[in-house]
Length: 143
Image 1 (cartoon, rainbow, N blue to C red):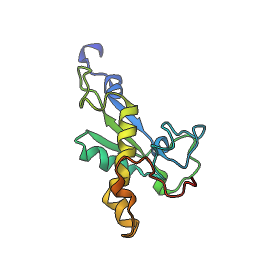
Image 2: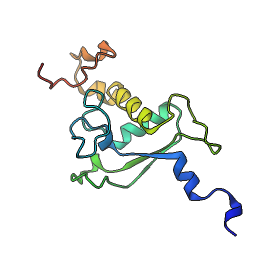
Image 3: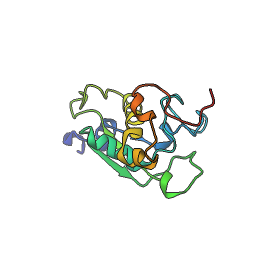
Image 4: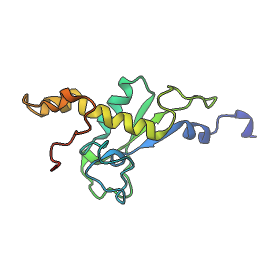
């Protein structure tokens, strides 16, 4: 039988978690699929950014051409899903800091604003990047 091979696709799937950009998009509501708080979320993150951050963190990551069921925007920027391996074959975490999908989402959302592609866009006079963990990532908030 098939059983003896031990590694069913199921095992593989459980070690990899799915991340859609929608999960960490500050522009989305919880009803639309956002999974972390607006304060921690990023404005319109792309799959590529998620992948770059996780690859830089040394994670095993790849992209799939899937779209979140609640993503009405079929634009290329919103397309895609990222698969990241957080557990090894024996079930232990690949990296201590990423023991759950939530850990991964929060880390990615924290790192995306620091990506070169993001910091260049804002055009020099941007001081917010120096604040570190100020929590005020989005400039559009009215206080």
